[in-house]
Every structure is written in structure tokens, then in C-alpha cells.
Image (cartoon, rainbow, N blue to C red):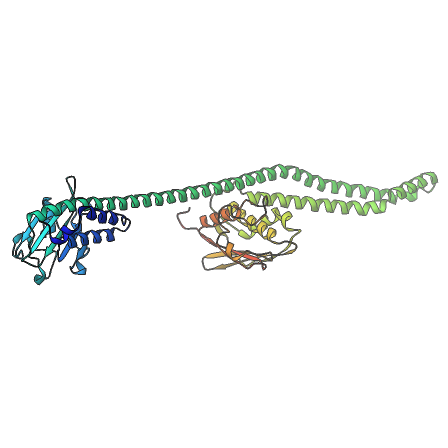
Length: 467
């Protein structure tokens, strides 16, 4: 028969308590301990142990215990070892009465203290169909109240019920793990998609800049030829004018010979006065000088366009970055000349191994951003220096600065504080990627209302394996 305590508890109440326990399925350790407490209390036991098999063909792990040493919780039991191991191995419930300490089958028992060894014990396998998921044992120290086969059978009914509760709890836990895993995978997929999208946008921006460079190179090539013609023709024209004025001077020297031809002299004098030959001789050479200066400036712009584009220089090469900054500055001068004075404080730099056209894109973004940051009129200071095996170039402006909360976001794709239509938010992101590709870094310091400074560090020589 069941013990008095178990008899007083109706099966309905037992099921109710087990149902209440299952509500705690999101806290498996509490569920397991509560289940063991039910069994120990219901069968008037003095101690009990619950061990579960986490994975098939694995040892049992003690997950809950009543009146057993605390350090035992979490320990492993091999299949076939001790009461729990034997029951898990055979899948059969076990009833033991009397002193079991000398039983060869149980050399390793759950309770290590010899004085506390049980005198009566019951142990059941936790089975779902034919699969054993664990084992549960309860023990009595009082030899006068030994368990019976009826207790073992009735206990088996209860154990079958709690096995369902434990398995449901485990399934819920596994489901939560799967949900968490899927959620993590979704987060990773979203993160990868975001990185791919950012990379694609940076690639599009890079291709856009490459197209601009290609266009610049094409324009430079198309302009270069007529500029060459004009420059050459102006030189020839200047020579012709000198020859003509030299001939005119010779005619003027012959005027005294026309003293007997008063009418001719009057006509020549009137024409000279009308044409203002004296002013014309002075001004025509001034006009030629200005024209040649203008053509020289056009040629400089054309050369800067070619230097900026570097379309024929797609390989890593040694280049003067001061020259790259200056040519880029000339290209974007229209964005700057009405907003800022440009001050150059260049140091002495060696040529560096780089992709010049890509670095020019970085310089262009830095210069244009500096100009946009200045609301009325200010200063853009360009500095450079060398330290060890690295060179640095610095772009400092007296603009409105960058708020501290935005400093960590300025290199994010599409992040911009410019008004709609003024910026894409890809300039600094692309610059960051290009500098990283050169195994360099960008340092930023700024304070709202006091301007910003961007310092770009670049190695003099690239590592052997280039990105």
C-alpha cells in the first residue's frame, strides 16, 4: 500500500500539483526540484535524487536532490553504475530493502556518506515510450518502514506522469533554444545583408567616382588638344605682331621722306590718331600676355584633371600625395574659393605606395566636407608629416564642427547631417574604406561650433599582401 501521506493526497490533487509545476517550464531547475519534492513527500522518504540524460547514449547528470550533499548536483553517473545507473541501463524499476552497502551492483551510490546509506529504496526509470530519459530514486533510512512492491507499482504511475512533465519542460526549453538560435541566425542574416548592402552602396559610390574620373580624363584629353593649338597659335600670333610692329616702326621712320607730300602725311597722321597706334601697341601685348596666362591656367586644370583621374594608373605605385592634394584642390576650388581661405602647412613627405586616384577621392571628400561645414567664411588648413613608417595628412576647418553623439556614426553609410539633396552620406564611408584598403586609419577630433580635424595615416610601403 501507499504510505499514509500518499493516501491522504488524492490523485486529482497530485495531478493538480504536477500541472501547477508545469507552469514553471521556463524554469526547468525549479520544475525538477519541485517534482522530486512531491515524490519524497508523498512517499514519506528521507532523501531522493533525480538524474537526467541530456543526450542519447550519454551518462546521467544529477539535476536535483533532497537531503544529499550539495556538491553531488551536476555530477555524472555512468550507465550501469549505482542504483540510478542500473535502472537507466535496464529500463526496469527497482525495489531494495535492507543494507545495500555490500551489494556488488551498487559500489558507487548517490549518497557518499556510509552512515546515511538507505535501508529501503525505490528507483524508477523515466521513460517516454521505449526511450529512457533519466532515473529517479527515493530512500528511507528507517528499516521498520520498508517500501513494498505495491509502493513501487503506485510510484511508477506517478513517475510516468512526471516524466511527461519533465519531457514537456525539456521540449519547451529546446524549443526556446531553437527559437533563440533562429532569432540569432536571423539577426546575423540581417547583419550580413546590411553589410552587403553597405558594401554594394560603397561599390556603387566607388564606381560613380571611377566614372567621374573616367569622364575627367576624357574631358582633359578632349580639351588638351585644342588648348595645345590655341597656346601654339598665340605664340605664333605674338611673333607675327612683333614683326608687324617692327614693320610699322620702319614706316614711321620713313615719314620724314614724305615732307613734300603734305596730303599723304595729313592722312597718315589722321589715321594714327584715329587708331591710337601708341595705345594699341601697348595694349595688344598686354592682351596677349593675359591670353597666354589664361591658357596656362586651363592647361593646369587639364593636367589636374588627368592627375585626379589617374585612369591609366590602376595599379599600386609610388606617388607624391602633396601633388594629389594640390591637383584635387584645384578641381574642387569652385566649392571652396567663396567659403574659405586655404592654408598649406606641408611637411617633408616621401613618396608612398598607393592607388593615387583612390586617395584623390578621399582628399576630394575631405575638402568638400570642410567647405560645407563652414557656414559663412573660414579657414581650411592642410598639414602633413611623417612618423616612423607612416605619413599623415590633416584637413582642419573652422566650421560648425561635429556633435559628440555623431562622432561614432560619421563613417556609417548614408549617415549625413547635411540638408536633403546636399549629400548622400557615402563620402566619408567610401573614404574610410579606401584608407582601410591602404592599411591606414582616419582619426577625427571635433567640438561643436569649433570646427573639425580629420587626420589620415598611411603606410609608406604597403604590406606584401594587398587588399
